[in-house]
Length: 258
Image (cartoon, rainbow, N blue to C red):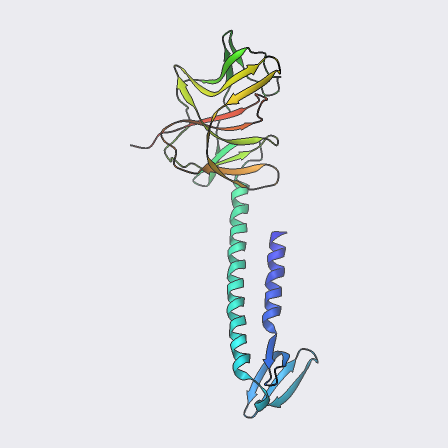
């Protein structure tokens, strides 16, 4: 569809450029396909009458005619450049999208090939113990405070670039982003949870990293990257719905090369 539109506009530009206004000194003009100055006369092909005609050179405002024709040519070249750049961008975007699997998950490109981050297993830690978080399960009945955690002090997925670019294919229409994890003992805390017994609401607190995002397809594929370089530490790409505790976590670490 995109290429069809580009082709249409290219043809429209070509047709527009093919017509020239042959200005006359009385202020009017003839719309012509082309014209030729022949000594004391101007011969032109009339668009309106589809025929060759001639008029005295003294009736024609050549300066205005050639000046506008030059401006039109410059505009044509500028528009053609824009179309070429847009077509190139569209082709590059298509190539980029084709590299990313359609399965829900988080990916990055390395040497032009897609690699996936492993979906982490999260646990909810309350004063009564730990339980594995399952996105399809209802909100657990916790009291007071709790934490959502990942086992281990460090992620196995390490990036030396402090501005990594990720692709996230959403499993459903939800919020997403990058968050900072806090290491505490042998676990990394994804978010703090506060359960409100009366309303049965759950307040989720997480450290969100400001990001740029670009929608690549209409079925939930996005490209995301941090607005600023991220300091060394533990992070995660997340997909979530606030208040539902159904967060999906893909953890990674930033560790600059030495």
